Length: 404
Image 1: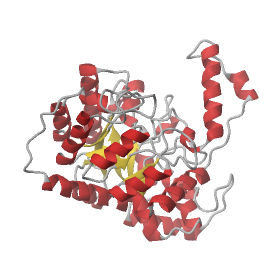
Image 2: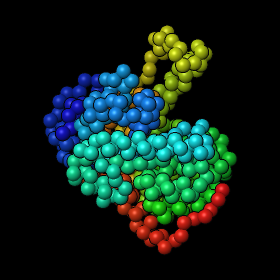
Image 3: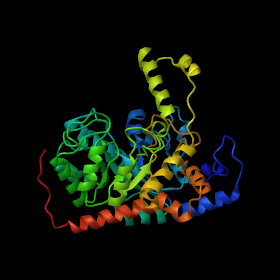
Image 4: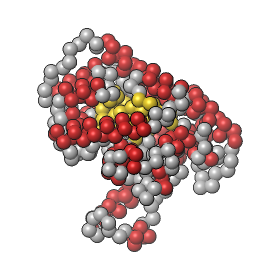
């Protein structure tokens, strides 16, 4: 049942929407046929930071937005939002290096495994596209794993292979800081985009049926990754730079390159990726916090003088629509980035129950049911199936012994 969010989607995106039963019924039909497969959710890290790495510390079947330490994700809202598949990010920060990063990654995988084990009636592990379809058919959320940064393998293809053996379905090549073999969009970089070892990592990921995730990488690294990968790439949580000028967003030429590779760009809801005004406001607020002494500073006076710029579902839809125009409807998906965006969100899209709001906005703009179904899950399932075929074709190749 799609409950909470569907009450919000029934009229054009305004502060006080009016009911539209026909739209509600239409979005219900689309999501029953093609539930959302979301490319990126950081709940495991939120559980680590706020709840001592213990999924049992809170009731994930209830609304976690009401907790003293609120979250954007819970199983009740995922069901309300029509989520049928989730790539859970097993993120660790780029500041964590070497063996410490590997250990923390294993601990993050353990959090997801314990979460799935605690809710066997609602969650089910999935690795292949067929597993995802089977879980959704059984009424469970297909749960997959994504490593969010190449620093998490500590320059070891052996570690990469062990992650794949544990069921990790993708790796983001880098996070907010460049590493020795691939450059990030978050700094000047030092690899000239990507080194030969980086290309070896991609080849091994292809062999292992591990999707290559190009979110967070520099433009040069993205070009190199697309050229190197035999399988379609994904951008698990990235938007369109032509709509909002942010280094984490993807320029049009690379949107077309991802389409040419057969990949998919999965749109995130982080306001900084959606609005230059909001990004400037957030940067100013951070600067004021630093000026006042850092965490815990009283920002109430600054907030009164500097109201937060509104960010709405229409801006999310603008990014989705632009990617569809440039790359094609076959190459856009959804990757909310919930619980990895410090509690921020567009208005009306505060949690994982919100994707129906976006689907209704796109439907109002003329998207067909088939186009919406590609966006929610069809495109990412196609990418997964193609990556599986590439891995099967490489099955006779021995494990790579490449070193940085």
